[in-house]
Image (tube, rainbow, N blue to C red):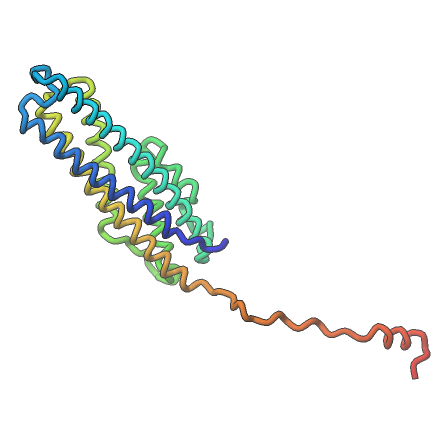
Length: 244
């Protein structure tokens, strides 16, 4: 299999992650409004119905933008991950030496409980096999420290998000407490996005270095000489006995 550069996909993922981080930071200030205007701008005690309507529409729009960006980021991240994993074959990595296939590296994100561990192991293996000459080392390499930190922040961010939406949707938490939980969720989401950018760029860096070691056939190389053969007329005359 030939090596397929994934720099474009990695750049798209990085841009989407930057947008996700900015949206997470924006959500922090949105939640902080609960402490600036006690009771919240959208509380029933607010006398300005027009302001309530505008803010409600902005809140809904902001939530939709966050959802669209999140889904788009996930799609492009998994596309990049699959292609980067497929490049391992071009680096001479045998499928039998891998614990995770390209399809499983992507699909494991959608399997309950499995998604807590396997995706990180697959990405860790992807980095290890992408390091130049990693197969000649006696011990397995360990990824940079921000790899496990990213995964921990990603899991924690998702947990807090789920907790926030369930508690606020069912009105099982006060507005002030919900605002604090929302701010924590925003901080975790922003940090996880920044760390994810670092992970993507690190894997891209290693794969780019390894791709430079793949031998490339020279376009100026001449084709091999044709095999020698005897003249047909000479062979025919020899067999007929009319040769001198």
